[in-house]
Length: 184
Image (cartoon, rainbow, N blue to C red; front, top):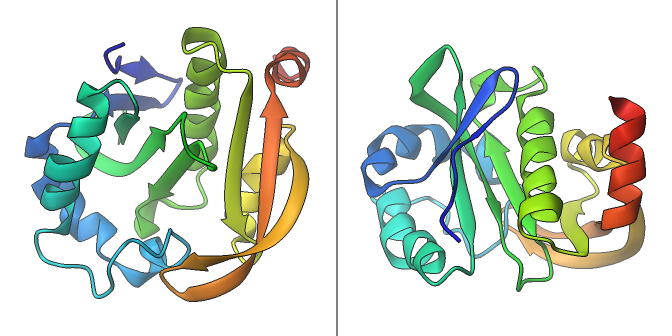
C-alpha cells in the first residue's frame, strides 16, 4: 500500500520525500525534540542525518510496504513541515512522532496521532496499536490517555537522553472504535 496523503481539520500529513530532508533537518536536530526518542538516533545529530535516515531507512521501508511515514504540515502552510509521524507494523512500538519545539502545546501531535491511528485500524486493518514512551514525557503520555489507550507494562528503555522508566500503552480495534465514536 502506498502512503496516502491524510488531512485533519488543521493538518496535512504528507508522505515523506527525500526533498523534505533539508526542511526537516533544522526542526529535528534539537535536544528538545529528540531527547525522548529512541536511542538509535545519534546525538549530536549529524548535519545530514534526516537525509540519510530518509534515504537509507524510511523510504526503503515504505517501498517494501513495511512502514508509513508522513511530514506534519499546517493546512494553511502546506509547504512548511512542523513535525513527522510514522507507523511500523512489525515493531514493538507501532507509532512514533515528533513536533518542532515552536509548534508544541497546540494539540498538533494529538490531531496527527488520531488520524494515523484511524489509518492504522481502518485502512491497514491492524488489530492492536502499541506505543512506548518515557514516563517523563508527560505530553506524549497525555495523548495515549486521551486516545483511550491502556498502560500494559512499565519497563526500562533507551532514549537519546539515556535509559528511562518507560510505559507501554496499547489499544485494540474494538476499544478504539468505541472510544472514537464517543468522542465524535
